[in-house]
Amino acid sequence: DQQVKQNSPSLSVQEGRISILNCDYTNSMFDYFLWYKKYPAEGPTFLISISSIKDKNEDGRFTVFLNKSAKHLSLHIVPSQPGDSAVYFCAAKGLYSGTYKYIFGTGTRLKVLA
Amino acid sequence: DTAVSQTPKYLVTQMGNDKSIKCEQNLGHDTMYWYKQDSKKFLKIMFSYNNKELIINETVPNRFSPKSPDKAHLNLHINSLELGDSAVYFCASSRYGETQYFGPGTRLLVL
Image 1 (tube, chains in turn purple, blue):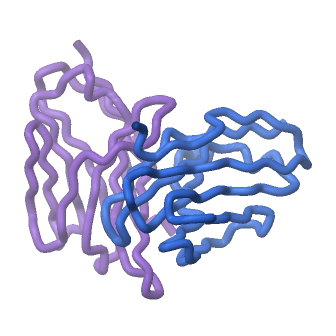
Image 2 (image 1 turned 180 degrees about the horizontal axis):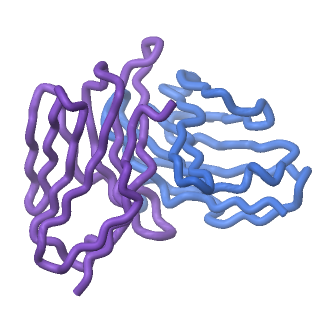
């Protein structure tokens, strides 16, 4: 049962335009959400996060939006740059049997075209 | 001054062999993790240790055994390797409940 879903396996965007990556989740008890970026042959690196008590968090060109009623979050990258080309994972944090655990989506491969 | 390091980066071995992957973090974190990324690109938690105590133990074959000699190290030993064990294994660390920081991954190929 996949609790965190990224339904778009890939996305291509022109340089300078906005990239929007989406993530849906099913567990309403998740209290913290994160986005990770992954380049080939490297580990995921933390990008930005948002608490469930907020609906928006911004860090430079990256903004994460959370819509709790729709159980949906999105990552906006404006303006997109070729160096943003990578796989983006969303992750959600929940408490399972008294222990925190992160559940990851399957990733969306972003390609920013120069 | 790598934050989370793993060795080896690549591991090619025959079915039936036993192998170990090592992980070290210098971030002063108290919690470490092993994840497996399979061919479908799912990143799935396998184990987690907090202050050297096992706190997450997902349903993985008991051929996989983690060992945490101290808070900065978490090793993964795999016995009797099978073809289906081929995957990328990521180590991560964090302060308990906080953002996780990942190592570069170990690409395991079982022939």
